[in-house]
Image (cartoon, rainbow, N blue to C red):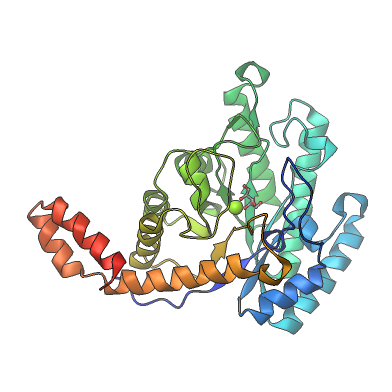
Length: 346
Ligand code: XLS
Ligand code: MG
C-alpha cells in the first residue's frame, strides 16, 4: 500500500442541477453561481471544476479582454473564499457552431471556432491558477459512419491538441473519454484511445486522462481496471466518480449508488496506486435525482463523499495478507467471499 493519502474533493456548478431532462422541464429553481460557491464552501469541499462559460458566462459574446477581466474577478472571489479551481473545460457542445462537432466538424469554420474557444479556455485556466484543461469530446463522433472519416478525425483531434499545447507551454490536457451520448459513437471512447491519441501530439507528456465511472460502464469496461490502466502510465490526472445502472442514458448517480463493490474496487485502486499524491482531486460528477426537493439539493454530493470515505476505510482495512494467501493458493472462491464479507461488515 502507498502512504495514506489525504484526499481533496471537488465538484462543478453543473452538479447542482435543476432537474431538467429531455422529457421535461426543471423541478428546482435556478440558483446563482455565488450561491453554488457558498454551498461548496459550507460543505467543506476544496475546489471547484469549471467549464469556460461557468467561469465567464456568455463567453462567445465577449472580447478576449473582457474574458480575461472577468476571469481575474472570479480568481479574486475564489482566493477570497480559499477555494481552488481544479480544471477548466471548454463547453464546446452548446454552440450553434458545433452542431456537427468541434475539432472534427466537417466545416472548417466550426473547427476554427472550436480551437479559438479552447485557447480562450486555456487563458481562463491560467488566470484561475490551474494548469489542467479537461476535454470531454462530446460531439467528436458521428451518428452514422459515412458522415466523417475516422482516421481524419483522429488527425484533426491531434492537430487541435497540438495548437492548445503550443498556446501555453505549462498546461496539461486531460481527455475525458465517453463512448456515446450525445453521439452514436464517439471517436475517443476509452482511456486506451485517449492515451493512444496522446502519442500523436508533439508533447505527449502533457496529454493524459480523466476517468469517469459512468463512462467506463457505458463502454462495457470496469472502472477500477480503467483507473489502474491510466495509473500504470502515470496519466490519471483527474477523476469523475459517480455511478451508472447499466447501458442506459448517462445517469451520473451518486458514487456507489448502483454497485457498491465496484465503487470499493475503484477506491482501492486509487488508494493502492497513490492517487492524489501529485495534488489530484477526487471530483464527483453526480446529479441530484429529478425528484429531489430543494432542501435536499446538495445531498448527492455529500453522500458521494461520505460513501467514498467509508469505502476508503474498507480499502485500508482489507486484509491484504489474507488475500495474498488466497491468491497464492488460487482460491478465488474464498477471495470472493472474503471481499463480500468485508464489505458487509460484521
Ligand atoms: C458529460 C461529462 C461532462 C464533463 C465536463 O458526460 O461528464 O460533465 O465531465 O465537461
Ligand atoms: Mg464527467
